[in-house]
Amino acid sequence: MDAMTLTGSCLCGAVTLAVEAARQNIGACHCRMCRTWGGGPLLALESVSRVTVEGEDSVSVFASSEWAERAFCRHCGTHLFYRLKTGEHYAVPAGLVDEGQAWTFDSQIFIDEKPPWYAFANDTRDLTGREVFEAFARGDD
Image (cartoon, rainbow, N blue to C red; front, side, top):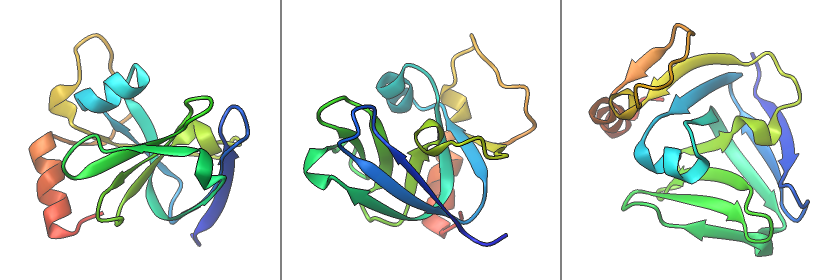
C-alpha cells in the first residue's frame, strides 16, 4: 500500500495537521504518561513518516521525558502528537485524523504498565517498556 496523507484539526480549528502514514495501523500505548495525558491508553497512528502543521503559533510542546515531547493546541487542549526529540518518530492520536478508515489495531506498547481494569480483544504484538526501548535502539519500526 502506498503512503496516505490524512488531515485533521484540533477542536477549535486553530491547528491543522497533515499526516503522512505508510500503513493504516493503530497502536496503543499503556505507559503511565500516556494514560495521564489522555485518561486512558493512547490510540495512535504509529507508521507516521511526516507531519505538517498549520497554525504552529497555537501549538504548545511539553517535554514529557528526556527522550520525548507531546504537543497540544494551546487554545482548546487537543492532543496533536507525541514525538521523539530526535524527530524520527511521531505518534498521532487516531481520533484526530480518523475519517472512517479501515484501521488495523496491531500493536500495544508498555503492556507491562497496563492497568488490570481494561483489556483489548484484538490479537496484537505486545511489547513491554524495555522491549520498546530496545526496538528503538535497533531502529525497528
